[in-house]
Image 1: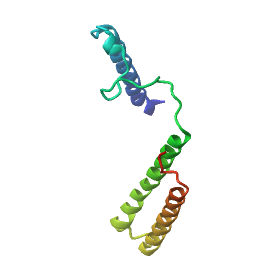
Image 2: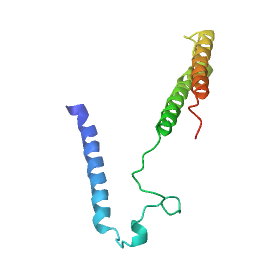
Image 3: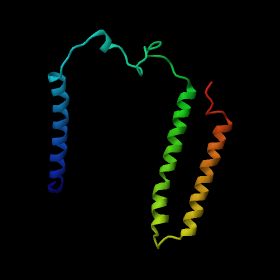
Image 4: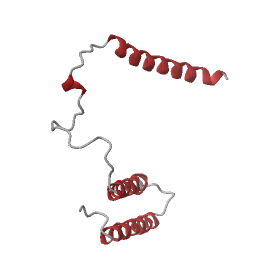
Length: 122
């Protein structure tokens, strides 16, 4: 238990500081509510419709595709660190072929969803 005491103290301090700031801003912050301040803000425009409208499934599909392709590109960072860093224990030719195959698979998936019309807004 001895090695964990500094971590637990830091965790407790962070929790106390966070709760103190939230509670303090709630009670000490200025409150002058007006009708204009209570309205929803949408980039300076008056809101159109209700806040509980249903989104198209295509919106979520594009969002998930963005996340998938964004996460996939994160895999390039460790590869680049090893490949361009010059680690002697790994064959550079193998790393290059491995990443080219990975990018090819990623590109084929991108072309597939593009041809299926997933990126088209109607």
